[in-house]
Length: 429
Ligand SMILES: Cc1ncc(COP(=O)(O)O)c(C=O)c1O
Image 1: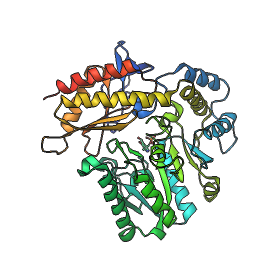
Image 2: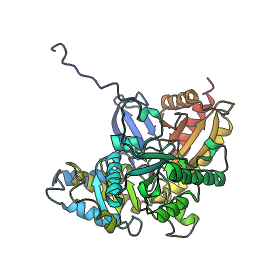
Image 3: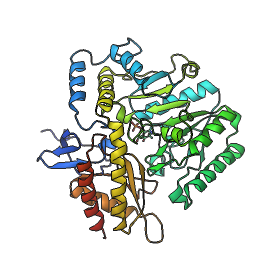
């Protein structure tokens, strides 16, 4: 072999585990030696129907034999049209116009463009701990850690940051945290970003990378009220929390039932990840009238709405409904959170357990209440050694999250809890 002909992966990619996967099935990943891992990461919440669900595999195989690429600003294709129709069954009423991209971050960019076009305003408000992606616009909306922003500036200007009601971190009750956050938002509107210059607020109904913090009841409604009062668009980023993950089809629907059904509606909804069970597909949904205010031809992309990814999304929708996976996420989510609380009772380093459906997390702190990222990492690595794959999150990376596929069974939840308990009780370093 010629000198210099061997390439390697860039060290910019940081691995959470040393596993090299060669195969996946359901909740499991396998390496070349045949070692089996219980995957409670789902590829960061992507493989909603589990790895290689037979229905998804079949749909993808069939589509790949018919049409792999049908570039959507050149021709339309049947899968895109069918998916657009079918998404109408699950999208909030009125959000009837869809634009597709590939990654979540691209959909965030699309929503940002739309918000600025539609309002003629420039500023955007985001919430502390937000994660919206890694492209420059989305990174500018991201406050989940300087690791996503440092050294790449100048970032896109016009972004103001308001508090998120992270009750545990703030040391407040949920109701107090909501009051604090909404008061903070009002101050941002009074001091930093004038309402008349504010195009949109971008919010995650469950803070994802920022630490798995569900927005307590009342927060989204408070945002809705201010958005309506000032003509600001409310963009709900459901990239991680959507498509059944939290036990409702969309996590923001918890706010609906906290008030009155249909009482809360975003202006723009962003979806990706679980949408296509592992194929790169993302979308934004908005009322047609709002979408019509974007400048024609201002959005596009070579791969958006790819036919194979659309076929995977259609199969995902079928599987979610036929296997009642949203209901399963709600049911298994309760089991998971209960079990995590039991485990935490034996592990003094775990200071908080929280989550919604199958977005569940344990936060590690020192006895004085300061974040303990070393303990979180140790627990996550020990779990991986025991065959349970998990990820970290949180602004201090001191939170271990569990995001199993929606097909997870009670037995698999119990197995994961057993491995987790072993990891955190053996975890006293
Ligand atoms: C809430 C949220 N928005 C946007 C993104 C970006 O998505 P992607 O990594 O597909 O670009 C993520 C990814 O984790 C996310 O959790």
